[in-house]
Length: 170
Image 1 (cartoon, rainbow, N blue to C red):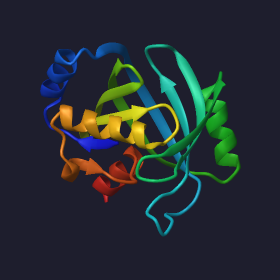
Image 2: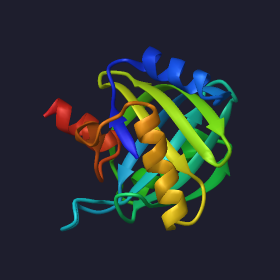
Image 3: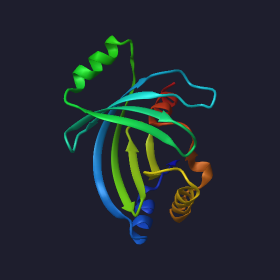
Image 4: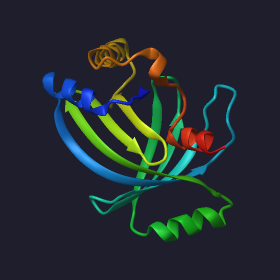
């Protein structure tokens, strides 16, 4: 679940007060290639080259939105960002956008809450559970949303940061 949020400090205070623990701080630069056009349900698939500046780590990911609460991602480590980008271009894929984000991840049990600041886009909160979509996990997501004071009308549905960035630039 992803939410537009203009007050990350307030969210951070609520996380700490509710015993969420800071897990990771990251600076990631994601280069996105769109695999297909927007589907009838408003989703599309991406290839993403992710560079984690803090960990000096690069990966290639295939990212597919399955539903409002589910995504499927397949990730593989790579060593050379420029070569993988060149290969994707040779395969006819064009860079659609670059998402530069500062990210803090907090954890409590199976729930991860991520606070993102996206260059040229703003601040966001993501709530995730790495596991099967079942009624118990769905309720955990909703409970965390309420705990943090996030509202359904703030929620970004079936759009990733590249969609939001491309829409804001047009």
